[in-house]
Amino acid sequence: MADRSAAERNDTHGTPDASLLAPADNRLWRTAGRIASPIAIIALWQIASLSGLLSPRILAAPTEIAITAGRLIASGELVTGLVVSFLRVSAGFSIAVVIGIALALTSGLSRLGEAIIDPPIQMLKAMPFLGLLPLFILWFGIGEAPKIGLVAFGAIFPIYLTLHGGIRSIDKKLIETSQVLELGTIGIIRHIVIPGALPSLLVGIRYGLSVAWLSLVVGEQINASSGIGYIITYARDFLQTDVIVVCLLVYAIMGLLTDGLVRGIEAYALRWRPQVIA
Amino acid sequence: MNALVDIRRLRRSFGGPAVLDGIDLKIAQGEFVALLGRSGSGKSTLLRVLAGLDTAPAQKLEIPARRSVVFQEPRLLPWKSVIENVALGARKPDARALAGAALADVSLSHRRDAWPLTLSGGEAQRASLARALVRSPDLLLLDEPFAALDALTRLRMHDLVFDLWRKHHPAILLVTHDVWEAVALADRILVLDQGRFSHEIRVDIEHPRRRGDPQASLIETGLLRELGVELSHV
Ligand SMILES: Nc1ncnc2c1ncn2[C@@H]1O[C@H](COP(=O)(O)OP(=O)(O)O)[C@@H](O)[C@H]1O
Ligand SMILES: [Mg+2]
Image (cartoon, rainbow over all chains, first blue to last red):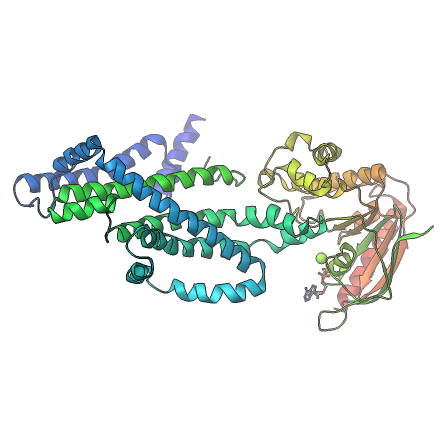
């Protein structure tokens, strides 16, 4: 027994896919290896800053950034800005989810709907949507509307495209089975189409979220009087690179957190899928 | 007695020569009919018309409203547990209770809360049978339901289907390419060839039918010859 497992371990060391099958201690080493390089880079950065090689006007030192982060959190500035930015993303993304799902259902479930909806979306998709910002400002002014609009516009595409693809690739045999079971159109949508396309939709939502945060970063650079973007604009005018980096980190953390939330939903909603790695 | 299924001069073609070329078929209430034929002879096409999944012109087409189908693949919804899948077949207020009873019928109660993708092939097909039976069909259509199972499981499924038929007594149309399966189970065997029934045999042998039984062997070899001859003119 012991001999066999030892032999297996030796085997897994030899195979290229060892990362999935590797025993725990090996995985620990790999993790350590992955952390080592970023730590080294931060150390070099710190040394460069301390030695005067890297001016704070170009980029503040890591320690400086950490101290600034503490100060911004303590003063409440960061939290207030974060709440405003988060509400913008929530509003824009909610609009994108509702419109994206409605469009995808219409075009996924009817040939006519597809003929009407799909071609224009495929064309708009090709456009660099961040370039629409000047138009959005002309249309919606400089308040919340253009920022929320940009978030919504950008996030609609991944949601629509993945859900539409998911509906189209649903197993026709299951649709046929539901006809035999006389589930009716509503029943087919409820029991087959929606759960069947859910894996694709969740991929689209995760991708859409990353687009939403990106759109917000761009949208907030212009004429923001509140939010993280406003803090960045203000810091830029006073050459505070430390504040800018803190704000960028906040964006990144928010992106990771919302992605983690969707992953959690995914893990629950798709628990029927067989576990490849137990 | 009135026939449950009464079809006359049914035709179906997909552009080319007719796959079903004027078929007449009667099935009595509670009758177990097996349908044999080489691959591509139109067995599934006929079954799909009976299931209401396909429309085809016929002089007469009487099919009971209460029908169920089991396909070669179990076709369970992977995102619903086994019992939810079966309950979907019932669609009544007490669907879950009925589904529980149907699962007990196919000896699958212990897997009621399992996800379909974790079932073995035999278990999945039993769940599919339960989902078909929970509708208490007058006509049960089986399209090569055991073809993908291993030989041992297949023999067990034969016994199960036979027991279920005895208990609930629906009429059954079993499409198969396994000659012994047909001989072991059916009251009547039809062979489909070139769009027509080329052969019809009544099997009047007591159940349970054993494989070495001389009468059964005679029928089996006759059918094999029939199918073999057909194969040679393809
Ligand atoms: N939807 C379809 N479109 C075109 N041809 C079809 C279709 N369904 C069946 N056929 C053709 O009809 C013939 C009979 O098919 P089928 O009934 O599936 O045979 P079997 O079930 O006996 O193997 C085959 O030649 C097949 O190619
Ligand atoms: Mg077939």
